[in-house]
Image (cartoon, rainbow, N blue to C red):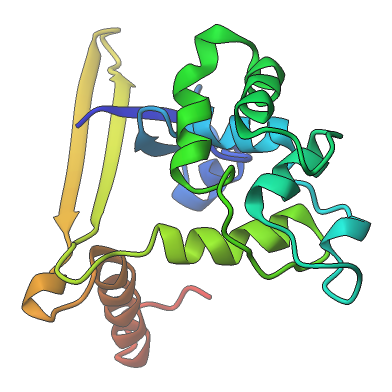
Amino acid sequence: FNLIGYANRDSTKYAEIYGVQGECKTLLRGTLRYKGFVEAVKALKQIGYLSTEKKDFLDPTEGPDLTWKQITASLLNQQIDIFPDSLKNIALDCLGGEGKIRELNGLDQIGLFSDATPERHLTPLDTLVPHLAKALAYIPGEKDLVILNHDIVAQLPSGALEYHRINLVAYGEQPKNGYSAMASTVGYTTAIVSNMILDGQSSKD
């Protein structure tokens, strides 16, 4: 898998949950994503699509409908009748120049320079999310994937280091009309713990 990992919020609270707060020197909880994910999200942020600030031009009760190209132009403080190629050049400069062609192509691929007319929801983020939910939805027969990785380094009393790696790779069973990997990895574990509590096997809150 061609993956990248990045830190995900505050990891330190898990030391107490796992009962290792007195001996664990380093604890990192991160998220795995396909390579390019971080750059794609950063590009959306740089253009302004992750903003939760209300924009007059995204008010569905005001003015005519806008295309994605016109919304992108407005976020970049450009006239809405700007030529598409000119808009892409301005967007590329906003992203950091020629080295960001891949990110620009990604924005183009999800339709943010198109003449499609989306529903407006006051803020850039609220307008973008329903569009991505449709554009990135799984097609019939497509299956999802969940990957979990634990790297553990332990120092023994002798001073020697032990390295342990635990991997979980779960594929969804959507083509067989089964559960997605996300549903099964979350649902089965929750069901097991719930059953343990009901059977009195676990007394923890």
